[in-house]
Length: 214
View 1: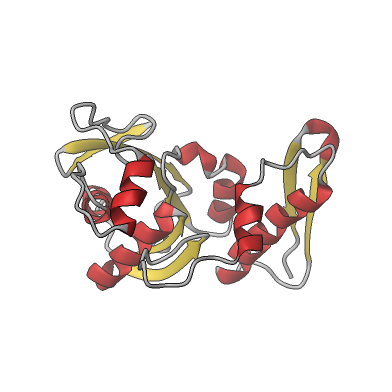
View 2: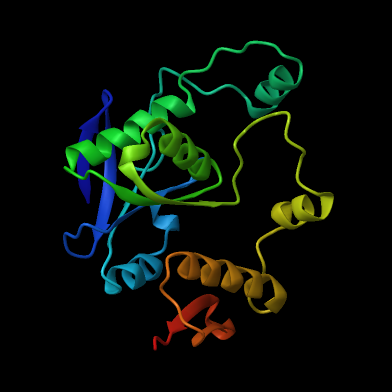
């Protein structure tokens, strides 16, 4: 486990692969630890010649927790946003972008490929717009710009996102959606050809991935 000091706090991070100019930075979603970017996923990217970095955002995992600056209740935040009211918050996505850039500075990394999901995708988008020279490419997964004037997601999509996690013994359709997501990520990075097999080990409650390259 590694740690850097940035923006008046400490961030914990992991690195997969050797030092390389093609570095992928993985940014997690709200309240999600870096370990949710699974080891297997990171190792597969590293085997393709990338250096992969995942880290805990502030207030998550082993990074600094701001106990003296509690976050507002989500319901209160949504209500205030919908009604144009101001609400006091400890920090913003702009602060988290500074955390992320500070991590790169501490590791002496000039540019990265960014993959962010959910809130991590919002951080990634904001970083690409405010620090464009630090970002080679951007993959935003299950995310948004946060613009309240944009239309909301279709009801069937929201129903899918809010459903319980699929049971691998009962819900092969749910796990096939996970497989499609993995395929799209690897395809966006140019890592897969037409030969790709992703399968589930249902009896062991896990997903395994096998990729065949031309």
